Image (cartoon, rainbow, N blue to C red; front, side, top):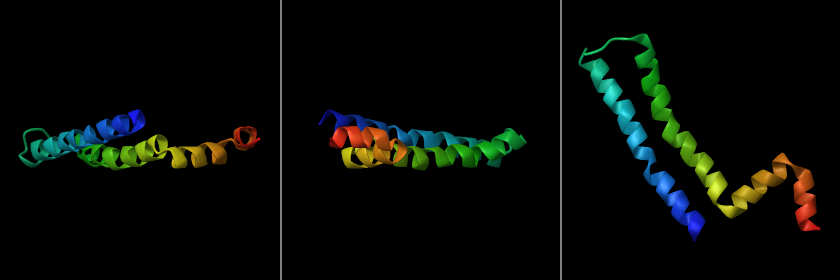
Length: 82
């Protein structure tokens, strides 16, 4: 139950990250600021929520986490099953 609450809280915090990216886009679109780094940052920041969402799912959903732990370190998997 506690892991579900943590996962839902983290997933709820992801949309504001996308809003930061949209804000930067509109600042660039309205020609308030012009910089090449900001143009690249728009797409980089916009991709963070989707990538982080997948990582959160892998970490907070128990079967996925066990599968990930077993594939990264097989010795731990063998010790748990024994």
